[in-house]
Image 1 (cartoon, rainbow, N blue to C red):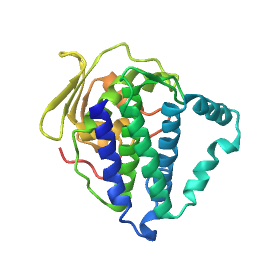
Image 2 (spheres, helix red, strand yellow):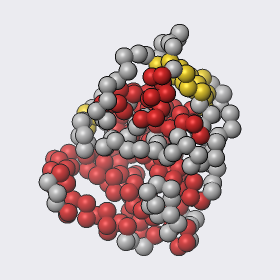
Image 3 (cartoon, rainbow, N blue to C red):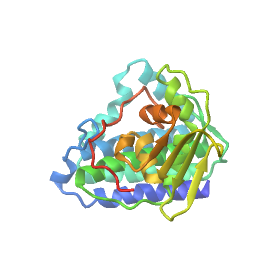
Image 4 (cartoon, rainbow, N blue to C red):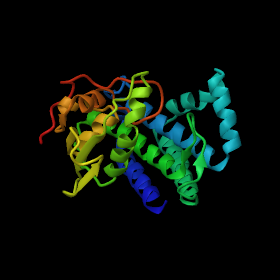
Amino acid sequence: MEKICRDLKDECDALDAVASKLDETGWEKKTFFFDWTIKKEIAHLAFFDGTARLAVMEPEKFQEHVQALFSGQVEAIAQMTVLENMPYADLLSYWREERNALIQALSQRDPKDRLPWYGPPMSAVSFATARLMETWAHGQDVMDALGIDRPATDRLYHIAHLGNITYGWSFTNRGMEVPPVKIRVELKGPGGEIWTWGPEGAENVIRGSALGFCLVVTQRRHYLDTDLVVTGEAAEKWMTVAQCFAGPPETGPKPGKFPKMKG
């Protein structure tokens, strides 16, 4: 758990470094993500880092929270409203406290430990990976809103792997049949290394940067606006429905929403 916890901390700290420098205008700036403000993006992360900490440290209390949420009790998400209305400095302090407690708790777990969440239980390593992915994705919303071109890091590997293992789920979550073919994914990491998934010689292939792939599977870009080269009907279909995060089916941005990435 050492590497994923270190990478999760680094991802959170990188976003924190940007958010902590914002003035009121910056905090209230709207992002492209459902017109959420930057403050709402951070409040969202803080809320779910808090419930994630509860899931790891006090699973019985977390299950009570989930039951209350699914039964429609508004108290279950009352803390979200509290966070959204906090002074900016207090929100940052709350987020730091919750995420650091979460990371510390995760670092003590075995990677294969099963942890409860809003959907099926997950292994501890997948749990940490999902939190990293969420932080990076909402961080992308913030960077887009501020016009910041943040550097890619090797932490993208975790998100790319999550994107690949949620291939089938991206279809079944929409009530669609999973294409009965294997897809080869070849991604260039930030340091020039090549990351691969799927069998060599597959007819359906996705090639490009790890950044482009991660932007697609987190639904922050349409694949046509990235540097991805997508070959094969199944691969193209996947890239239009890819969703590596939990919850009901969502639709990412339409082509042309953002400038096309340079290959």
